[in-house]
Image (tube, rainbow, N blue to C red; front, side, top):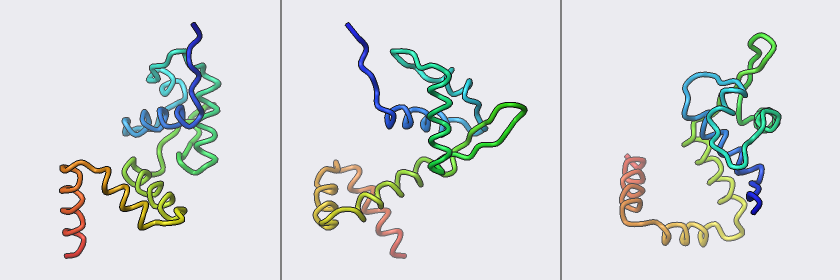
Length: 122
């Protein structure tokens, strides 16, 4: 039985989750140590992911000695909101997309959204 291979987007999401979970800058080795992966991820893969995230502007990097450390440019909530806005902007029928999105929310999330909308009107 062979292990299922993950896509780069999934690995990027896992790396971002690790970075968001730490307040300090992290080295690729520290990120690798936090990854719980089957099959195991190798150091060079983590380096590639972090470099791609840096080139996309998703993370900052700074040199510490001979290595780089990495930190998210934006918080998780801000990053997610931007992605949601981009998806909505790209939709052919944004109103329809929002309608389907709202229909998929459970009651507690709808109440939370209503409170946020009411608060933003004030």
